[in-house]
Each structure stands twice: as C-alpha cells, then as structure tokens.
Length: 222
Image (cartoon, one colour):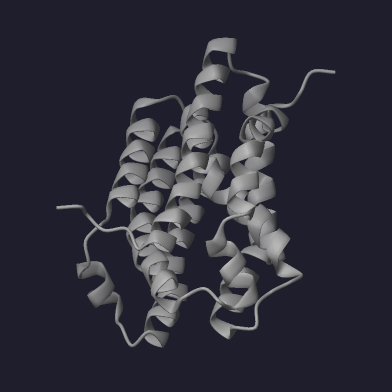
C-alpha cells in the first residue's frame, strides 16, 4: 500500500523526533529541573519566532486554493500572535519582564536562521511546499505535548506550557492541517513531493535546534 504523504514525512523525521524527546530541555520541563534562564531564553526567542511564523501562515493563506484553507490559515496566523501576546506575556510576567523588554532583545542565530528559511520557503515555494515548511511547528509540538502531558511537571509554569500543546483544542487544529497535507500529497508531482519532504525535514531539524539553543543559552558569538 502506498504511504500517505504524512506517513512519508513522519518516517523521514523519526530520528529527529527521537532526538527531540531525548533532549535535556524537555526532560527538565517534565521533572521541573530546567533552569529558569533556559526557559526564559526559549520564551523570548519564541516570541520573536511566532511573529514571523504568523507571517508565514498568512502567506499560506494567500496561496491557498480554497476558501476554507484561506480562512483556516488566516485564523491560525491570528492564533499564533494571540499566543505570543497572551501565554508568553504570562510567562514573562513570572520572570519579572514585560513583552516590550522581550521584544527589545536580539533575535538570536537559530531563531534568525529558522525564520529566514521559513519565510523564504513560503514566499518562494508552492502552496504544498509552504504547508510542509510550517507543518513541524504544528505537528511536533502536538506530539511533544501529547507525550509529556501524562507526566506534566511539578513546576506550575512548565506544566502550563505542556498543557497548552497537549490540549485537545490544539490537537484538533493539527489534525486539520495533517488532513490537508494528505490531500495535497494526492495531487503533487514526485519532484514536488521531494521538495516538500526536504522542507519538512529541514524545519523539523530547526525545531530541535530551537530547544537546543535555549538549553545552551545561545548568543551571537561577536
């Protein structure tokens, strides 16, 4: 039986996902030992990331062939900005920071590389390529949230982050994007399918790098 596109994509990133689950950042979230400085790094950079991710989703909406997909990606773009303004504001408040202070901090190397690749792909590629590029941020977070939800965290701040992505409301959004991805897989050429897989794999790797950058306390070298 021929694999669906989502089955093929997940097979391509299984080693990446395994490395994500094994990362000490996520282990520290669940057992409560993650240093607050690492989590703050993540939240600040995620705030920068989500602003560009919302732009990428808006481009997906602009390229979408049907009204339903246009509306869905436009809503997701608004949702990404709402998450940045709402959930992140709550986290930053716990650190004694404001959204304005976080916005004034520099966009660091991994964040800049990830968002630059993401935006270049959604602007320059087909609709299917654009969907593939934004998909890991939906799908990997859903799988991670689902995986960590049962364990949660003794730290209320980390438990809230885990619950957000393990929540059924978020999971249902991800299922909708996966269904769209499989429909696209029935229409695209073998050459485009290869490009879709390349973009999906690349942004999945950036997801691992994003958590790793926070764990390392990444800064600009000069």
